[in-house]
Image (cartoon, rainbow, N blue to C red; front, side, top):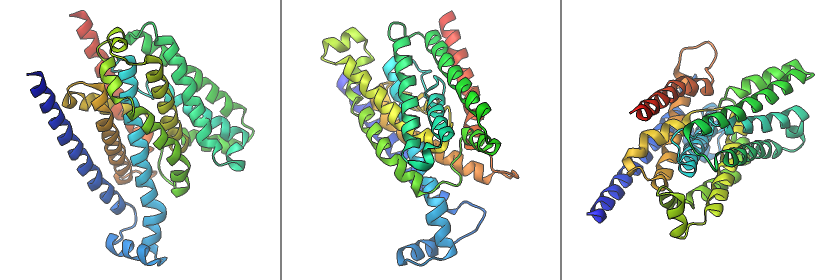
Length: 340
């Protein structure tokens, strides 16, 4: 009976993965169409392959294609990291934005901006974001190691977010150039506009390394869901598992935030929506959450381009407007479960 249930869960996971992949390919193709300029995609791709510098080819290769690629990379990183953090601390509210990891990564990037390191050394920006995310994840892990309750996680996340936000505000306040402060302020809202393949190549290596570290914990996360004592008795090295997740989240989220700014709630919404389709097993949730995060962020980026606003809405603002009520719903749902 158990083997039959496991087979059904694997079949359901494969169907979900295929559906998400198909949706991702469709949205990726549509994202190349969407924009202020109406272009013929087939002619534009033909010009690109033939090496012709037509207007449509430039719009696709230099503006829309890198933006779509970044949406996939960053969305997958946020969805994957959210699922991994929730599995590590065994708490459905753990998410890079909610617990302050994204804010700390943004602080690291702002410090690089503030001291001008990004101009002299392009890799300084993702390195700053990775360092900030790493420190935040380590701090949160130490705070919740002995008590992984929802209240402890939320309070720890509030503390990390508040400290990071205060230091970021301090950097903006002390900045001698008001135009630089304004640029950083708008960057913090989160956006994929005006990005190029320069940003793609900057974050590609740390992003892929982070994904590999997190995905290598699939089996151990499933065992960890049975409890720490049971996991250790089955041969899971908890210290090694936590280190891989912490470093993987720091690399992927830090690199993502360093080029996109703050984009929250993707890692909270996606795992919660997909968890039931994989039998509530955190290891199986990882790949599906990565694909779901990419789909969600790509759809959100297309939405901000289609909205009839005078100035393009920041994608971080849109995800916050969608994610904050969802976060409140989860808290109220958990409160009712505690009361019962």
